[in-house]
Length: 375
Image 1 (cartoon, one colour):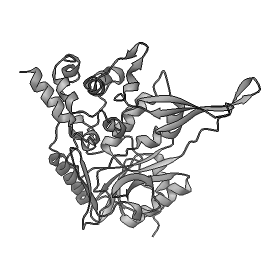
Image 2 (image 1 turned 30 degrees about the vertical axis):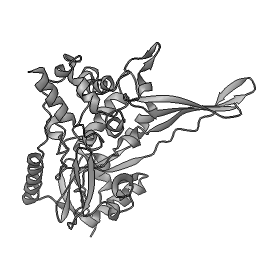
Image 3 (image 1 turned 90 degrees about the vertical axis):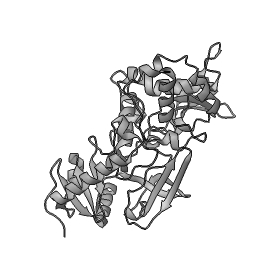
Image 4 (image 1 turned 180 degrees about the horizontal axis):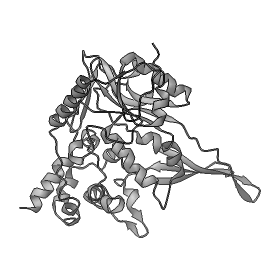
């Protein structure tokens, strides 16, 4: 039965799980493109979803250094998974973006760029650490002194359905970074999944409007207590820690410590950690000229501080060794990032641990560096 009430801002309600499809339909009617986690090629990807049936129902994930495994279990929940290599970064800051194109006209050139594509995304299932990563990239691409028009156009229209994380993976350490597992702010709707219902907290006027007429119940004290118990269990379940009280000085004050050489012997400089990281934002530009010389375009592409070419400047490569490139990545991520943007550049999602083929664990490396320094 349709509900004549509209949920209040900040209120917490429950809906039957099939009712979630009504919210997806409303989003599509409003021109949003719903993107959520899906099972594809035996892993998890973020792609367009049509209905709740596209979500990874019955799945969970096992993650440890250098290892990711999707597990199909017998439960009926949709959000027990922890995301794979992909993050929401690819939608707000695509791996390749055309900045402009030009057409030769006689002896001069004319801009021939197509209008900038500004998709209106609805992100379904954004974890607390991932939402923190989006906020970090907001601070990078939408500063007071500079705003990236491509990022801003996508970001300001994004509708976010976040999810409280109740089943952290073995490589997660968001509690150490203060980013999770519970979502605190900057969502349109925040969802916690219980066995029978979705518990929704309303975070925006857009969400209120979209939920108008959708059947819901106010969340009872029992429901709210159940949500709290699940979140407390998730916090206690997360045993991986990264001590950050002495950062960034631990790194900045010991850039010449020989332990960096030891890490460099294991690192493959493959760039996996930077490509899966939801906050890394290094990019390069490349020009493409047609064979007849009449058209050209300039593209922005993801880059990595592990690429030897990234450090090539006038006079040569400033970081010719793997250890120096790893030190650059970590000393920025957990060091000078704070001086630049007021926060560390890590949200504790654990992707750099899971997807490192050399099984290098950022939490263990920081602990080992601390031990070496204090010997």
